[in-house]
Length: 186
Image (cartoon, rainbow, N blue to C red):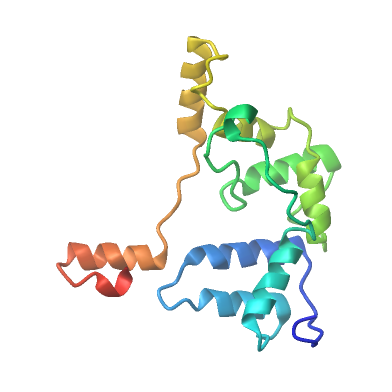
């Protein structure tokens, strides 16, 4: 319900992954949000702010804020991004195939909330979780041996998620390279 109007929402995991990809594009004109809302609702609701809020609730699987989480230092993790749906697609596919016997490329439908619950319940020895552990382990933790810190740093470099520049960032770089005014892109 958005401003008292009922809008159907796309619930298949592939649609939400496409939505995620659209939002990350960061187009110069900001049109990715309208396209994303159209993808999710089939129409662009009048109250876009409420639509975005309701969509956020859905994407978070209806989970409310659980309050303050323990510090990263206490958890022994760093601030690196643990996972990226696009960059880790093959690892996610392999994990679902191995653990659940589901081919995510061939399945007709899988609700987003089910997809996320299954993703969170993958066992620690699945390669995706091993890679995530490499990415987020705090290599400054004094409990790690010097040798372990060196090994984890190497794996972090190898598996690090590198953000690709958005269209807006690309336009800014082009303007700077060509000696043009960068102000419109800031």
